[in-house]
Length: 81
Image (cartoon, rainbow, N blue to C red):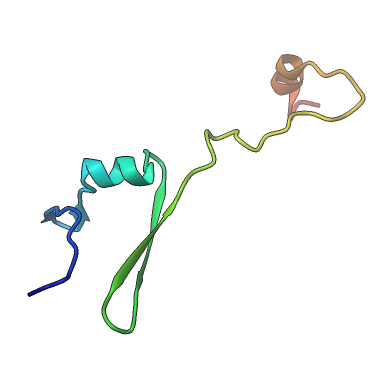
């Protein structure tokens, strides 16, 4: 009698495999997240979910200086002398 637990299965197509919906929901996997793979000495495969931190500007704190800026004018004039 086998005691191996199977939560879900998926097929490999080319070099890609789908993550079953139930597993995605349980691990809160979303577009943009990454999977970090490792193979243990006994052949066990481990997958770690690395969640993205939000959008492209998730860590952007903005301008913290003392001067007022005009981004449109500064942008349009950039590189012109």
